[in-house]
Image (cartoon, rainbow, N blue to C red; front, side):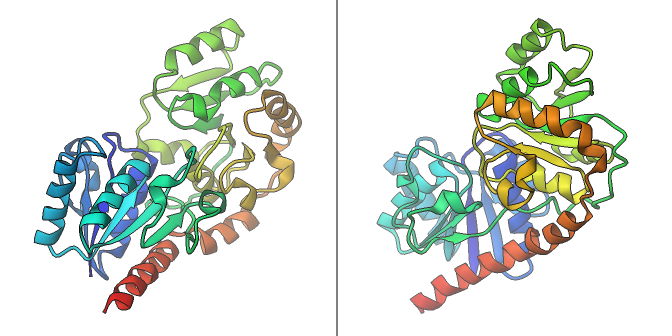
Length: 325
């Protein structure tokens, strides 16, 4: 069984980490190769990678180059991650007999890119509503983290790309009556606007945006964080909630992705609703020291591990190939 994973972005973030960890965990049971942009090859250490200039998802020439590579390397299954990669996968399926698997990592206006595949995986249940024969395989906590319990003596944190969809503007506005330190960890196009909002609301002494914390150094933040806040308008996972729980950090979040499956409703706000988020934070932030996360962590380790996800994914691969034999 030879599997190729296709990702289309030039930034190493959540989807790319997901693919890298999945391929790494399956390398002992099948040959894995990640097809990605050359700019993120260095992040895929230990897993075979290759660069193809895919370009436009609608280019017949680029599709031909990809099919040629897959046949030359005897690839059994092309696993496409995200909408752009899956659109390319649809073209590969049209012009070849290679089996195509797609994983939906986030919400899209429609699921056209993921229709008529041989198999579809969703990282939360809502993402695959209406897709026949699809499978729910949730995200997992970072397997490289030791899961050391946080001292919970540090600031409250919020982690993610500085983009509108993460709702950091709602979070900042919701902090006006909270006398606790908050670190927003990430980088992205909204950085200047968010810093100006912090200044406008006179919150510079309580909120700091940290932009120089890379993916591998996040674990140090988890070791002391006293809470995690997820203010997203929509999410596929989010993975940061799993990572925080693995470090026994209490989570307050908007009701997005798989978060309602992880934490009690008392810790949830409505997405894209700043008043709801502010009410939640003003009620629950003072109670964070009292929240015991050991039971939630025990359930997390059992249900949300990369080894369990790899096992389910391998079952999908094997079923496809066995049906074709």
